[in-house]
Length: 474
Length: 96
Image (tube, rainbow over all chains, first blue to last red; front, side):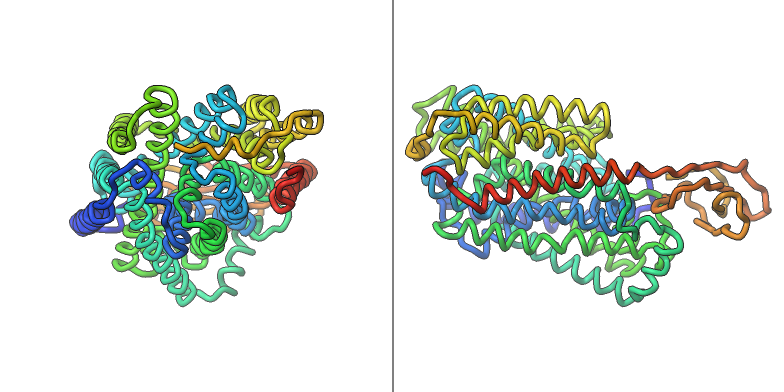
């Protein structure tokens, strides 16, 4: 993120930050008041309905990347770039039937780690934990860092203060209210984000007709309109597979599948995917209009806020500040909750204290949330600017987990050798491609190698998994 | 991204393959950077001018897109993997 002139006075920004912080903390305390056990805290009593379920699926997937990186993708890779970003919705759409299957196979499950442990054994489980904790921590750190950087760019609030406030607020209400607070605030945050993006999209269209946007792009940035723009078409499936890997493996999504009421999970993820799909397209469209609107863009990652501030003035600056704050909070809280549940269930309960009481587990999950927050804060404070790149580095890791998960849920003949080899070989080849060729082929290569290995192992396997083993009770 | 340092407002002009007829203004103002994207293959010359008409040394920029054949190969590979994932999920449990 380059240094550009702030578009919102710091005093207004602090006022907004304080008001929304108090609102989220108050709601978190209110929604968490009935949590007594670990199941209440981690899975909201397994009683989330369709409206909240749809909203939390969409809101969690709307990160600061969706509102800030989607415009950057459009400005760098054009129409295909915009669509490539939107393909991340396939992660949610395809997870819908998987969530139904997960609920049927694992009615008492808590985490995605439970699936790996019960389905493939301890070695595959250990590899999964290393991969997923690396991915979750880098995502969490990159979101918190993005929070500090964006608030500074938008309003001049010092990086350390912006990052600390966002992180502290999310830690407090997630500790107090658990998944119920995360899902409740997600509902409000998703409404704010969607309304904001729709208003901004129409405002841009009312300022400049689509013909002028097309004419400007055709004369000044012709490759952005090209159907055969090589870099853009390469990005499509790499991005799509990255999105699938992120959703299929991460406990953020599995914990929701376990938390939704019976019969809700499939519909909620499918609707969440459909709600999410147009968001990056609308955000990307804003960037493509920058030339026709004569908005000077000093850095690609600031194109969204600059166009919005130009079109809507002071109101637009307030709108983008609120949208960014909501999209950051809706992702950070989900990651904190899901990662603390994973550590509590898979490490504390299954390895360290198998006899721990449910009430103690809730306390442990709260302390783990606090520890994760402090750890994230300590990593973010020096503002190491390269952590967004580290998140791309996780692409091969998540891509290599797609086939072990999909076949493990549907095929009895899928086995531990396939899962372990698929994850290690896929991640290894993917990382080699990351360094030898580039990020844009790393996830694709990892998924391809993992697929070949997992399918070969399943083809020659004589074992038949007993699905009843997944129905483990607490 | 193209960056510069200047004390006063500047104008950034770009022309393609040294053809003056293609000259166009990319940016005019007090910023110290401008983002360029979506250019076709070719050689581009960038020149910075201040209000008094003082010019910077021209900056040459060559754009070479990645080979289309490689891109289409990767797209085909990605599409096949994606379709295999979709088929596995939609087909459901196979050997229960």
